[in-house]
Image (tube, rainbow, N blue to C red; front, top):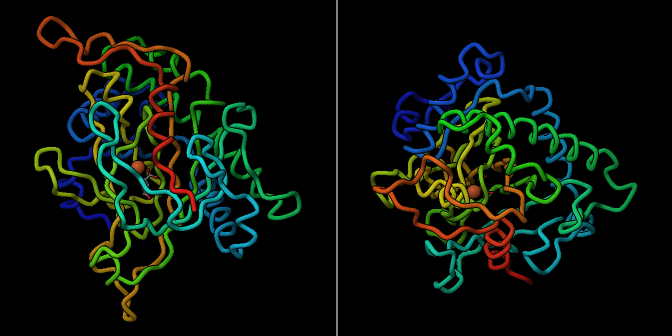
Amino acid sequence: MVTEDALKNSRVAVVDFSTFLDGSNKQGVADTIFSSFKEAGFVYILNHGISPEQIAKIFAASKEFFTQPMDVKELARHPPLGTHHRGYSAPGREKIIQPNSMGDVEAPRPAVPDFREHFECGSEESTENPNIWLPDGALPRFKESCLEFFWLCYDVELNILRALAMGMGLEEEYLCRFHSVPDEGNMLRLLYYPSVPAEALRNETVERISAHSDYASITLLLQDDAGGLEIEDPHTPGVFRPVPPIPNALVVNAGDFMKRWSNDTIKSTMHRVCAPPGLETSDGMIPARYSIPFFCGADPNVVVDCIPGTWDAERPKKYEPISAGEYVRKRQAVAYVDH
Ligand SMILES: O=C(O)CCC(=O)C(=O)O
Ligand SMILES: [Fe+2]
């Protein structure tokens, strides 16, 4: 349920993207996206170009996949190392690890497992991260649905990057030029959080996804109507506010690479999924949740320096040039727990 208060509290703007796409209010949309990224690191995008039918289709494919028996899903098992990030992961295999501002991991791995299953895939042309599918014959339409949705998301990504560039006072294609290799930079993730006892979430014996920031440029997220996504209040560290589901909307957030690239002008906000209040059923369970993030990374081998307009004599560059590949590989390598 979306309440006005929840939206106001999260300070996440809601943008009707159709007026960017039809050209009637391009600069207005661009300015709102950029200011929401500066303020909250998140923005809701309505009418982004992916139809409700296409959204229903990918959620149906995701449900069909996750309801398969474990031994079937394990036929597309994720490799032991996080650096080849494709295929199916059973509950507890991945634990999000939050590094410090320099990208280094200091804290020991937290003991609480994330109770979720996920499946990652990308372009069939990727050489660094080849896809891992179920064997031919098992769920024959699954691969096709994932790939079709991957490319729909890439189109939306480019349009949002155009708007963001305009909001930042850059030439419209500026950011797109650094996101021209979706074969390597992008990843589609299907996420399933099984129904879980509310008590287990409350006393933290399990988590759904612990607080983290994403690490690439931007993430486009579809969530079902279960709720539970929360983001950290930019003005009150440690306080998390709901980002409630809006039917068919994309929740778009900036990642750590974008924060760094924009010399900290754009926020990469901590977020998590926990037990949404009021959702506990009479048997003490929190219902299942499905969500679908699409992670958008910059071209891995291009070294980037702080974006023009985000630094000057008063706001010197805080970061050395870096390539997205180098940055993301470092983050992925530490996120995986092999069992
Ligand atoms: O399930 C969600 O809504 C959040 C997923 C997420 O934050 C992630 O996969 O990075
Ligand atoms: Fe995330």
